[in-house]
Length: 300
Image 1: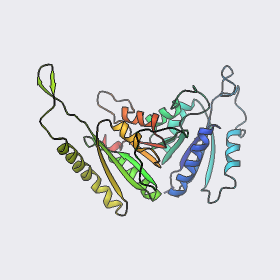
Image 2: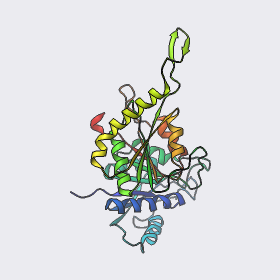
Image 3: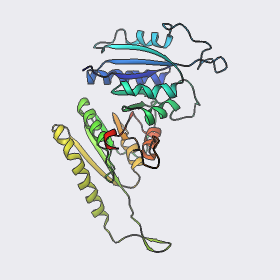
Image 4: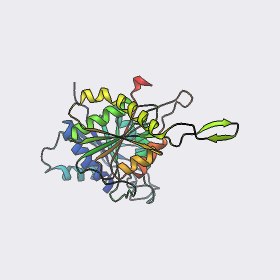
């Protein structure tokens, strides 16, 4: 059985060059081939630096030519394929995930508005691709609430103890093992808890915060136990914290190699694919690369 490639979506922008470097490293670690894809969109009436009037010859692609030159002298480069496709990138790029083990792209491409934190292609891929998607942000994002982390490589993953996602946990453990990194598991819990006393009145329940935190940690350790068996040498640190999960994950992203989050599961009454609010916030504000993992289709 052939190994699925790591795909880097490029468009000639600085963002896509950073994504290419990340994908190259990922392919090496996975001992997988690298596929570099440029989705070309053409229209005579649009911005000349974004779209080109009239398609060129199939083999005429300056973006891919630049990538070939960039990778020509790279040592230990994996088997690399170059592919030019035509169409709307926001529609074509997510479809690349059906033939990849990992899809990597920059947070923004050449088009769009300068103030956007995440371009339409990144959002569409994170929402719709069938494989995990890594979005590599521009450097310089500041995280003000993050505490100083222990030095060394680190992968961060969010764990919702009320609805754990096994695909996300498995990906995070594997990625940390591939990188020789420690895995930091962030399990946030709601606090203060509120309960209805009489109609229209919310009051704090008679429950101790330490008890809630201990229960959160116990549940987290239980969900992590099967993954520890597969990665017995991996250091896993569980962090439990009250409040906003997105805020804790963004804070933990400071100096992290990767932050891993799950995509929103489909619901019976909302069958369309969605990105949950926590995942969207992490994509917009994390200081480093973010991996969005689709749920295992066999688990709904």
